[in-house]
Image (tube, rainbow, N blue to C red; front, top):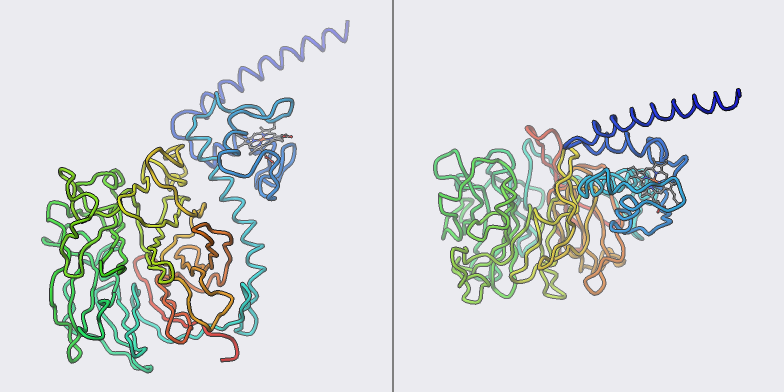
Length: 480
Ligand code: HEC
């Protein structure tokens, strides 16, 4: 008797509990729950607040019972694991929500992995040791405003752009400002951006500058001008690229831009300018990588010259904000790195007419932790060669072909802003086989270049978004 009473009570209790739980579920799944609350509500009870495990597996220990790819993790969450406490969430969570949980797991896992990576970087008495080399960081310059691009001249002196619209010349420790730089639109991420030498600079002394350009002071787009430095002044030779005023936007976001030369063509990137859907629109210059002749004309074999309404300068599209781009001089291939939203920073191999997917397919989610899409790939779109989820805010890329750091030869140096990292990617047959940390927490890396002597120059920016300070560091082998 007593037993059956208590049994009834339990059943009642369970019933009430389940109906309350059901109401709770209805509430918590409404519209765009952020990923933190999705996780805390549904998963933390078993997997732990920090994913360290409990009733359920640890999700940060790099051991995966059901596979480690994004797709496999996605499927475990969606379908559950039969005969275990891991239920199928596919009916109560949308595909996008599950996708954002996968990214969230990656973010949390990254934090614990980074501790491991940090241990591999030894920093003692100003000497670093990482990725098989020993080196030290030498500070060459400090500047009251942020820097953006650095380029060496044949005599090892170098030019550095300041985003506020200045150009600096450094020669044997002496810094001079170049006068008469074209007016730039300095707002948000806009300003004076990249600098590159004409492939035949030795003979013609021509230099390309990319910058945010405005006609009315209110709206802007990325542009490129070309000129020479004569007796300490900039003398413009030719406007190489300028978007039609109708394409200018008031947003201060995502201008790109890096410039690269390959086989005597100029390639340059323009970010989506904060208007993601425009990256898929071939009538818009933003969210693209463009290709022009050295004089700014359209090469006749550009992919969209015959496509109605398309801009003939477009080489690739679906690019979110490629701020790093380089030619691997050994393979003659162009590589770019682009910022993802939250997660989904990409390394891409840039080839003709490709659609890189943004914003339809991405490994990232919205900054507020709500899902963007559950698609990481789509038919007809190109996958990144590598992606960083969570984002490191990838800004720059350069292949190392010098001798000073022999173990780094043929590998790609990658700079990051938000995570303040310098990484080294080993790439074999266009696949990344290793991603190592070289330095961390020394400042936001905006650009990097390898000098003729094999040392690595870094442009660092610190401070808040509204008051960046620039610095130039040089990474040299220890003992030199
Ligand atoms: C009631 C407890 C419980 C809850 C709630 C739960 N899980 Fe699990 N989860 C488990 C258990 C137990 C396993 C291990 C299953 C097995 O033995 O294969 C697991 C496995 C997993 C795995 C696979 C791990 C691996 O090693 O491959 C993932 C990913 C995962 N859960 C994610 C989630 C997410 C995301 C949520 C929330 C939407 C969630 N889980 C909610 C108990 C739970």
